[in-house]
Image (cartoon, rainbow, N blue to C red; front, side, top):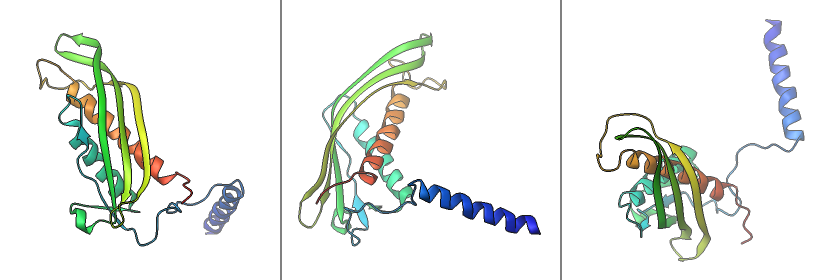
Length: 178
């Protein structure tokens, strides 16, 4: 069993090297107070013609925050410490390539929006950022749901997942001076 102690020694040595290079373990962002434990994420205001995009964004943001476990999403605004509001200002979806007429392979999406992180008790805006995204999404081939515009809903869901990840990372790794 000497190899187990050797393995533990190598893991410890490798950890010291990583810490010496500046890597650190996950920690709560410094600008978030310790008593802030919950977040309320309402559906985003949507000024575009994509009616479901606001709900998709709030759903995937709740999912990402629940995975991160540093702020737990709640469904009652009165029970929340923070509120994350957002607006969808523009969304353009264009099909780029087709396999057949009813099977879209790729979609080009341009998105513009804005989000705010607000302390509920005081109403103070902690973080306010515009967000834009231009991406080409490869749409998986599956059954045709919408004959007029195939692959549209799937592309909106992929966009929402990407935006939720970007917003979570921005909140996590933002160095604010409060």
